[in-house]
Structure formats: C-alpha cells, structure tokens
Length: 235
Image 1 (cartoon, rainbow, N blue to C red):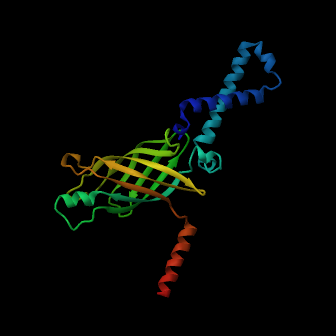
Image 2: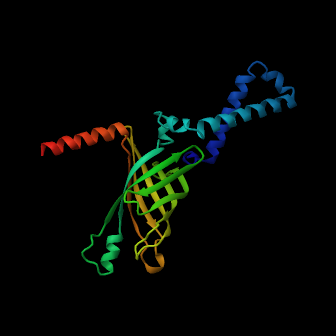
C-alpha cells in the first residue's frame, strides 16, 4: 500500500516520526545533546527504533485497515481489506463463436469471492469462483496513484489453479488485472480489466471486465434473505 505515496514520502514520514519521538523524549535536553555527539547518536538511534516499532504496529497489524477508514487517511490509503463479491465478464464466449459455436453468447459471466489482506507494506488477494471451478492467489500486488488522473489503482498479477479443467482449459495459468478504486459517498468499489495467458499457445488466452462489490455482512445477508422470502410469499 505504501506505493500510493511512494518510497521517498514513506522515508520522509519515517524521518518525521523519528524526529517527533526524539523531540518528545528529549525535549528538555536537546541543546545539551548537541554538544555530546555520542549521546545524540544514541538518542536518535533509540527514536529511530521506536519509530520503526510504531510503523510496524500501525502499518502491519489489524489496526491498519481501521486507520484506512478515517476520512483523511482513506484519500491516500483506500479501505480495501476484507471480503468482496466479484463479477467477471470474460470474452470466452467470443472465442467460442470464432471456433464455430455460434449459439454461445459473446460474454460469459462468472461470480466469485475475493479476500483482500491489506497492510501498509503488503497486500495479498485470494479468489475462488462460486462454482468452485478454479481459485487464484496473487503473486504480486501494487496499490498506486495514477499520475495523470489522480485516481488510485489496484494492479496485480495472479496464479490460477483449476483441479479438473475442461478439455479447452488448462490446470494452471497466470493473469493480471488493472483495477480502478472508487470511494464515493463512503462506499468503496472497484472495477477494471483483466487478461490471462490461459492456453495462449492455442490462441485461447482470455481477457475481460472485473468488478468488486463489498460483500454483505451476516446481518445484511439475513435481512436480504428475509426480504427475498417475503417477496416469494407475496408472489
């Protein structure tokens, strides 16, 4: 997640925190320490260690996703940690039509679930299709700001595993996606494009559109199911 502000700004933030801790601990002895280089070095080293501990505590623990929900912080680090409902629209149907199966629709839609583990220094993602046909996990992930438009992007490369592939499929392939993160009215959503090297030697590699919607919590699911039951009773 640190890619949003860049390495230089991350280093600058660490320096500011270090100096702040140094000033807080030694506020009454700073002038005296300036005349004692060795003691000054020890004090700065201690402040640097505490700053590192602060970064680890706030950035690499469960606290970080909560910090990302704060109004100002979320403009830099979007709150993407957690469970998401994913919809994929693949061009596989168009490929099948080119192979002579004209009855197939151009776009094939598939639903799935994604879990995102978001921390300051690392982000991981795991995907599983609702039909359990395949599952994926990320190889590398970057969250960064588009220098031209100022929007935040989630870019990742993943490996997909399919235990029992169809004859036109393969058991393992790689893919990548470039997704735009939107934070509107306090709700985060993501959408973009993906592409794969799936059976590329046979010209069957796929691409498509992917969208993320925050998964409903247990209470919301129960309310939605109750509404469905009520509507079915009325019908």
